[in-house]
Image (tube, rainbow, N blue to C red; front, side):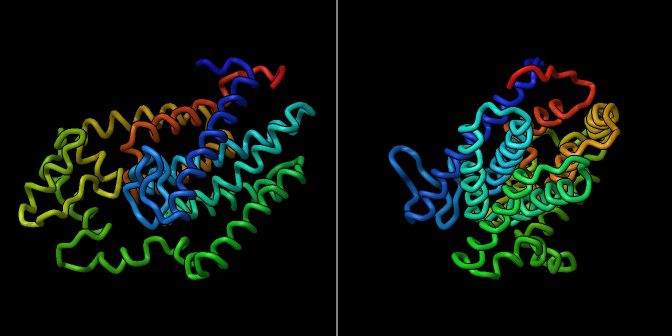
Length: 306
């Protein structure tokens, strides 16, 4: 563990905030300009913001971690009178990161953004014994900008879509026809679990299995199951799945006491596990591990200096 002191933890949060700001600014610039490439960088999705990523959902999940890191940096840096200018910059970064998530138009990313903001608001108003008014005001400003940008620029219907991000997919559950809707792909993934129940079909094998099962789909294909949970079970089988999640359970069991940030991470992980494939991206896995490790109460970080 390289975070020996609190200032190391703050530097990590500040680094993520800066990287998130640059990535969100680049992605938003491409979106607003209507161009798919800038200099030597190219966006593979027109009409949405993806930054330096190919997938808009992975981009939004990455920015969500940067968003949380920025809020944590602000909350912790208010204890000290130092780093005044960095706190000003981070407040600006938070606004750009939120706009980057919005312009990605990822329904899961935007859904998680609003829920993270609600988690922080509930924590500030009802759960914390010592409320920090400045930190609460920053969150309220983010909510205001978020709603204004959505309501005035992108259309008010976008706000409803963010909470009903699975509305269209739920209508496909009872549909017997084969299509590439999210729940149809998840249903296919579940059906394949029984064919490879013990040892699974191997990590990264879903795309090959899908093409073999549907050879007449022309250029359409699915390289992920849109549900990390069913894909993990299918890839590793029951034996691998039990071993994999037992290690996660044992790790989380060491900090069963109330930990606000862990609750946010677990909520985000459950949504992604059930309805998305971002946990199959190594960088997102790395960020989850880093945040979980930093939030464990058995890690003793010195509070001397920032």
